Image (tube, rainbow, N blue to C red):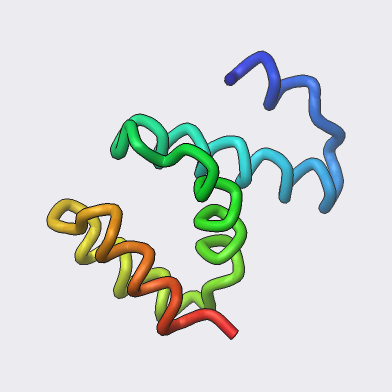
Length: 77
């Protein structure tokens, strides 16, 4: 993962790609069952406003994958 991040461009696109790689890595390590929904979860997670992201991170240790999807579903769009 670090090698992949180090090869990204140093601009906004590279920053976004690095955040996506990090989020995918954290989610796949936290929940082994991400599977096909992982890209959608990561997209919704990265679109959260700062305040909602803080709320999510405060609850992070206690969240199940279903609770995370519910949180993102209620807070996206």
